Length: 123
Image (cartoon, rainbow, N blue to C red):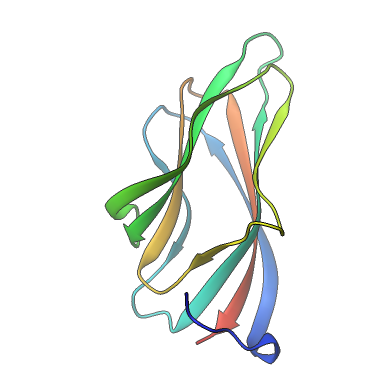
């Protein structure tokens, strides 16, 4: 894992992604040419279906834009109706160096929304 000096922080950001299909969907991608390190401090999956549970899988990819090999962080976990699952938090951050990405796959289209909070650092 690359060393990141605390004074190199650019900012903290949050992205929200609705998983509208059952295919892998990009949550966050760090391009090879970015010169940045992304420290993911929170990943939350919320089941917005008021009736049915829905499965979620979250993976870190060895290349940007869901390229390379997927390394599961959470695999086929059932999220109850109207509930949330914390996949990662500040005690278990995920570092995305240049040319890596983070993606999620829902078992049911339109049932899960993802919220990812991360800090961006200059390389």
